[in-house]
Length: 561
Figure (tube, rainbow, N blue to C red):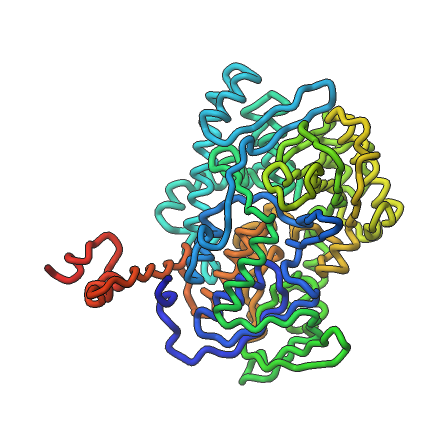
C-alpha cells in the first residue's frame, strides 16, 4: 500500500531488543523494523498493551487503561509510517456529546459537544460574555498545539536549535508565560464560572498532575476536546493494541510474551560502554540472552534504570528521583451492570464542588473524601460488542495518590481494604449523582485495581497510573530524554520520557527513538511514505513516475511533459 519508509540508513542496521510491549514498545519496535533492524520485543505479561490493558468476564470486555482517542492525526501518522493508516486498521466513531459533566446534585448534567461554535454557545449560556473569551482561549490553545506539534513534541532535543527557530522566537514571550504560569491560574484569570474553570482545568489529570501544577502551555488540551473532537475505536482501545500488533508483526518484529528482562548487558567500546545483549527469563523460569547492539527500554524509566543497569550507567541518580514527581495514581473499577443507564453518556466527568481540596488530597497523599472527582466511561453507549444485550459496561477512574501501600484491587470487592473503600464510595456517589439508587444491586461483574497493581503489573514507579507528571520541571526538554548517553545503543521510549503521557505521545516517543538512532535532529514529524498507486494495465511506467514525484506536482510535470 505504501512504498518504503524514508531514506534507509547507509550502514547495516544493528539487531535490536525492545523491552516492554505497551503502546510505546510496539510503536518503537515497528518503526525500527521498518527501518531495516531485526527487532525482538520482550513483554513480561502474557498479553500486549501495557497500561492499555483488557479484562473480560461474562460477556463484558473492559479497557483497563486509555479510553480517550485524541490527536487522531498523530496516531494516523504512526500507522502511515508503518505503511498503512488508522482508517485501514481501525473503525473510528466520533462521539456526540464528546462528554457529559455532573456536579453535586441537584445540578443538572451538562453535555459538552465538539466544535468551536458549540463550545462558545455552551460557555455563553452559562455566563454572558464568556463565549467571546472562550473564542480567544481556543485560538491560543490551537496556536500552542500547533507550535508544540511542529517544534517540541517531535524534537529529540539533541540540541536546543529547535527553540530558536523563527516561528518559536516570534511567540517566545507568550510561550514563556505559558510555561511559567499554572493551568488553573491561566483559566481563572479568564473565566470566573466554577464549572468553566473545571472544564478547562481537568485535562491536567490526563497529564498525571493537578491544574495548579501543570504549566498553562497544556491549555492546548482544550483545543483537542472542545474543538478537534473525541473519537472511539470500535472494540475499545485494545483494538488499537491489536492493530499495532498486527502491523508490527507484518513488519517482521519477533514478539515474546511472558519474558521478563533481567539485565541490559553492556561491554566496553573504547572509552564507553555499549549494548551487547538483553538477559531475560521466560514464564517457565528459564534464562535467555538475546544479542542486541540496539536496546530500547520502553517500560517505566525508573524500573529500567534501577533494575537493569548498574548505578554508573543510569541517567538519573537517586537524588534526582527523590525530587521527581511520579504523577497521580488511581483506583480503577470495571463494572458490568444489568439494565440500562441512559443518564450516562460515553464519557462522563463528575466534578466535586470543593475542587481545590480534592486535588490537594491527591497530591499530598491524604485519604480521599467520600465525594471526589471521578471519570466514568460507558463504552456500551457506542459499542454493542463490549457488553451483553441489556447490560452496560462501566469503567470508573478515581484519581488517587501515588501510594502503592494502598494495595491491590481484586474481584467482587476482594481487593485491599483501602482500595475497596474508595471503590464503594465511588459507586455510591455515581448512584446518587445519576439518580440510580439501585446501581449497586444491579452490578453483576466487578473488578478493582489499586496503585500496587500499577507497580506490580507495569513496574510503575510509586504506583503511578500514567507516568511522570507533566510539571514544568518534567515537560519538553526538561523531561528525561530518549537517549542514554552513558551506554552506546541504549534508548528510552514511553510515558516516563519525552514527550510524555498518553497514547499519541507514546507513539511520538517511538519516533524520537528512530530519529536518535538515525542521528536525525529535526524538530518535526518524519516524512510519511508516499502511497504506491493502484496497479493498472499498461500504466507501470506512469506509476513509477507517480511514486517518486515530489509533493504538489502532477505525473506529467514530474515526467517533464
